[in-house]
Image 1 (spheres, rainbow, N blue to C red):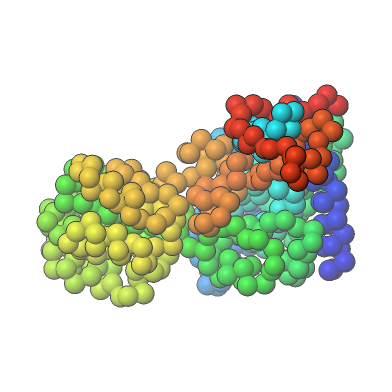
Image 2: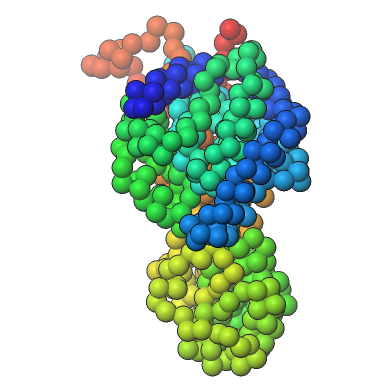
Length: 447
């Protein structure tokens, strides 16, 4: 099996080199072909998903998987047509990330340096449950000129296989699109094999829970981009508009509780905690949210029954469920300190009409996305206008936050001269560099 994975990676490496030279029109044509094929093959895809859902329901009954995982697994007509296929076309409509000049410098007369964006190469992705993630990731890689090796969760085996087959068939034989630009891995053992191929795979992106991400990080020399947890916060400041705050908190928690950008902890300033709790906690309870509060929350939230004590573990727990930990704080500084201690540096929001407090929060919270008077659920590639995302990164290098097309390219330096040699810039009568910044764009020569 190790030999098979290595052979697939070698094929992907060759495909990446070819795909990096495909034109934007060729890549966009392939994406549109995929979007049409997904709709045309709806029966095949939905039937495969029904098989996975039936098996997942049995596993749920046995306690082997959780309900949020099943929700992420399901693909129906609406999701296939309104989200997945439309998302592919949206990626095609995005600006081409390849070949953009980021900087230009005149080194000397006739000697120019350009920094130009290029694909990363071969990207390995390990993800859990969501079959739509396969489509998002693969199409983003195709648009950005990268080959991709995908390993989905076993619970989505049939759906992932159907989607991959449809996508590969849609692009087969198209100009500029090489065979092997996408590989689907299915066996659990193949992950270990992929993680060893640091000479063939340039980047690993894990999408899943903390256990998966930590396993990937601890078992590979390949650079890893992603996030382990989505421990997101909403802080309701003393100067918040309470009606606005209730809407934002409820949306952050309940709009899709199984998402990594759903709020897991609510922080509330002591001066407005009692009137805020009177409305907010009741509405959260009406949505089925269980509240785990600190001592001050339980004392002030007299109109809501069923509150349980929050423990220290709760502040660092990603529930991915209808559970919310709640804490009363005395200042924006205390809220920032709590978030920076317990946050996973994913997404955190402040609700306030005080711009100074908002600025302090936005500057002080060390997270990939910070919000002011907005739901944490906006931290998403599609909602950010990226078309789609391969995942959310909490890394401090290369890409941070929702990773779309721009996060899937790196750059190379291109130097153009006219017989220039380095030796002319050494010695007593040497030439000198001008190092003058230019407003210039590198233009590719005709092929």
